Length: 149
Length: 184
Image (cartoon, rainbow over all chains, first blue to last red; front, side, top):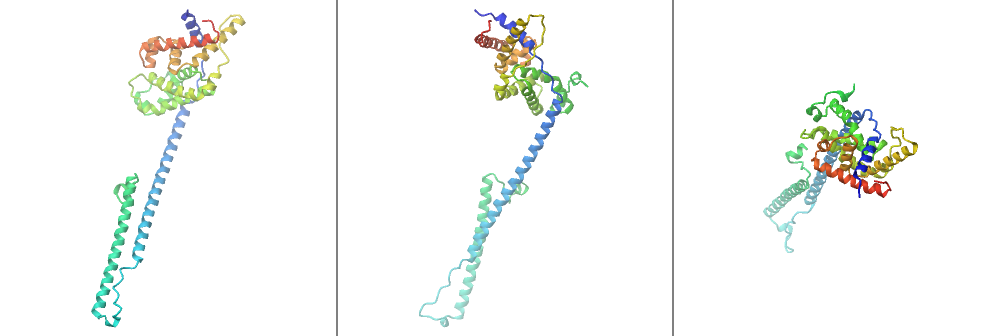
């Protein structure tokens, strides 16, 4: 058998006798000061994050440029297609002047092609790095959005 | 100047977190928040920290307050959530600490006063173990004397829900207090 009235009476009486807490002085001031401090910290953290992201983008691009330059240098410094050697039975003296001119022209053409190929390869590599950075959420430098960021 | 006697600020000023409006809000409601925290078993420095947390959350949330419910109801909701979180972090210390002084109303005999004090302390400790919404219902109804309907309005729920909360609170308290040997 329960006696709800007794419990309610005791509960009501006890709750009313719970001492009233004293108000906290300057609570609003403290809360606002804390909020201002938090907002300032948040702005500082955001600024640090932006600087960090720019540093990461810069180092990515420097790495991309270094790789592209290395590839270009390697391509340029590698020997071109060797000119056809005279047969064992022939001598240099036997090669006509016209033939020598043709060989020189052919060698120069090969060098130009190598330079163009190296530059093209460097551009492709750089574009690939930029594309990879776009896919990974890092804005590329060459697009307007990347330039603005 | 006593801010609690000023006119309530406009909703727009509150949403813009106008310093005067926020000061009014804190001064006008902090006792209610402190009492609620106390009913939930928080005392001393814990209670002050919890109240500061409540108004900190209120300050952050003010720009999103749309005024669809009364300000006090909205504030109570924020308070209950914040105090419940705070209490769960501080539970062990909070329940152990209880106020040492109670008002002495009586011309009661010393034994009777002592017994009354012990009963009160057991009841306060038991109320502090209730869930946050149950503790809030008990605080508003039994301590502050609001009717079930007014309590429901402040809690932003139907009167039936408040009756259920109070009923379950009483059943829970009855069980705990009986286990401690209190005659109910």
